[in-house]
Image (cartoon, rainbow, N blue to C red):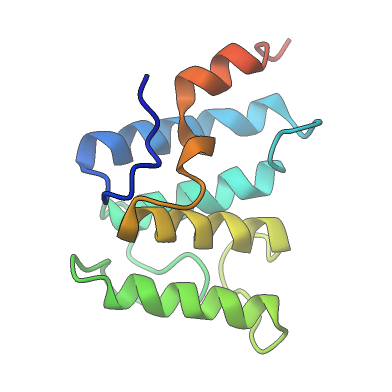
Length: 133
């Protein structure tokens, strides 16, 4: 599969595939070279919001739809930065740094096709990690 980290914002099919991967990967648990399960949780919640499957933003808890121009997503990315620097607390999710990172990285990828998209290359992930027992 071609890498999703192309510098081009992903289409709906790529978003759906990324969401499926983000939902499945926590079952593999933490391990060397693997993101913490909360990264996947944050990514999944951000992708659900972008796809219109949740009404509130994943970190700030604002009741706004994700918008194609990205102003709501940019505001959520800024909120993540504030969480990292101690100026805000996440309203949604478990409140861990890993969750905040997952939300932020997913939204950056949604807006510009760069960031952690290689993490969402599901064929590579499934080849690299064995199935949970």
